[in-house]
Image (cartoon, rainbow, N blue to C red; front, side, top):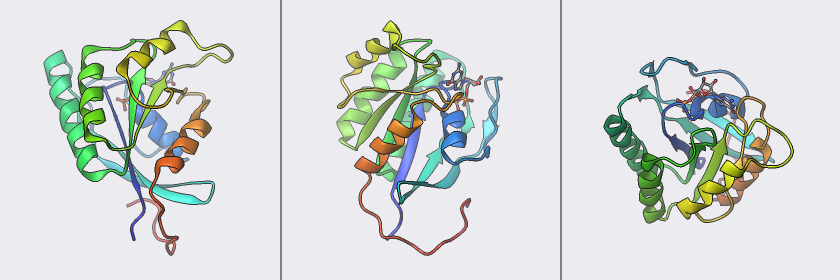
Amino acid sequence: MSRPLVAIVGRPNVGKSMLFNRLVGRRLSIVEDTPGVTRDRLYAECEWCGRKFDMVDTGGIEPTTDSEILLYMREQAQTAIETADVIVFMVDVTTGVTASDRDVAAMLMKSRKPLILCVNKVDSVGELPMEFYEFYELGIDGDPIPVSSVHGTGTGDLLDRIVELCPDAEVEEEDDTIK
Ligand code: GDP
C-alpha cells in the first residue's frame, strides 16, 4: 500500500513552497520572489508522530494575470482532487480572501476530499489578526489553521490535522526520501 498523498493548493505567492520546504525539513524547491519562475512538481516524504505521507508541491509556470491565475489554480485543484488523499488549501492573511480563493474553495469542497484550510503569513504571535477570521466565509469544514511558514509557527497543528485526515498507511520499508 502506498503512502497517503497530501497536496498543497493555493494562489501563487501565498507561501506553498516555503511551507513545503519547512515540512520536509530541507529546502528543496526554489523559493523566488519573482512571479513567473518555473518550478518542478516536487514530492517528498514526510513523517509526523510516526505516520508517513508524501507531500507534493505544485509547481510549473506561475501566472500573473487574474484570469491566468484562476485557470492555473483550477488545474492545480483538479490534479489534487484526482491524485491526493488530503488537500491543504493555502491562503494568505495579508491579502485576505480573493475571488480566485472563493472559486477554488468551492471546487475543492464539491470534491468532498478531506480538505484543510491553512492561513499563511500569520507571523505575529499572540492574538490572531482580525483578517484571519475573514477566511471562515469560505465555508470549509473545520477551523482554518493559522501558520507562518517563515517562522514555523502553527505547522505542528497543521501536521496534526493532516495525519488525522490521512487514510491509514502500512509502514513501509525505507526508501529514498526524495524522488
Ligand atoms: P508559492 O508561490 O505559493 O509557492 O509561494 P512562495 O513559497 O514562493 O512564497 C511567496 C512569497 O511569500 C515569498 O516572498 C516568501 O518569502 C513569502 N512568504 C512565504 N511564507 C511566508 C510567511 O509565513 N510570512 C511572510 N511574511 N512571508 C511569507
